[in-house]
Length: 348
Ligand code: DOR
Ligand code: ZN
Image 1 (cartoon, rainbow, N blue to C red):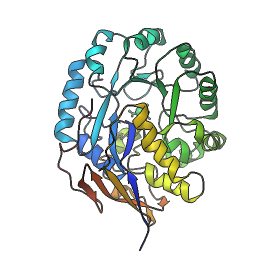
Image 2: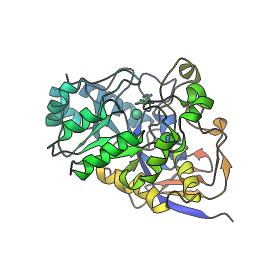
Image 3: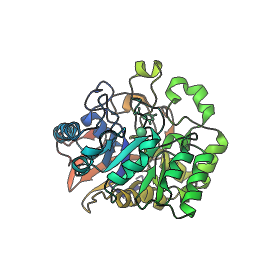
Image 4: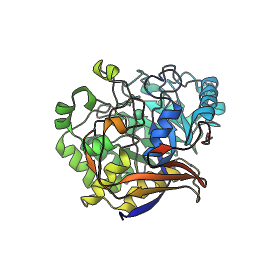
């Protein structure tokens, strides 16, 4: 009998489930089905929808849709271009954090950094502000944090340069945390050549040296975040940024564990304990995930994400989520989602 490991219900604070507006890529049901299949019972969805979540009404509408469609627990990050500060008080009551883009990516909602200070001051200081920064914006991002007494999380560490700057900021006592995605840990720019458009995302894949630096400094990286960013194949061919990851994050991390690059304790810390703590997310003793340690090959056709492809298609991984129990109910078993749409909790 293969070994069965019991893990807590994992938490992914960085996903793009595209609902409403771009449900040809994903929706709340398919996205949270993919989450369960990957061992995640809580996800936090980003605001860069076709119509970005910049008003309390749009947030309320999104929450209502999710309440009818989600099969896992879900919370939402709010968005801003600096011109909706009067909506923050109401929106924050129903948000997990506030996401700001300092670089161009899907949707093109790049914030003018002039607004950063005002936004930090207006968003409730017990809630996290999440930043999308890259090599060209990390300095201005870190400068904006000086003297700040509020949590800020810098998403998806892509490179040695960015991570080194975060490590230096932490050493100065700046209350900043950071995350890393599976694609930046498991792929590099050489894979970009073989994957073509399917290896395209923001921040882009970097060098082997950058990748090695991320692995060597896992202790400086607070959390794993999938940045699950589904697009149809046609949209990818047309240049869309992003890759799905909810179903591949845990199996890939188990492969790294098998190779001695990470421990199970580190996986649980960065996919559960620390995200729950940083983002004030509820956890439940009667929620758990069972992983059967039996090797399998990741295949596009087996994925539950609506986009139906993965940059990790063909990768051999050592273990698979075979059962998920959410608050005492079996919601996923042997590849089948058993939960009804609307059965997950909407957080915040
Ligand atoms: O590759 C990415 N895709 N990076 C982002 O920052 C956004 C995401 C998306 O929404 O497609
Ligand atoms: Zn993202």
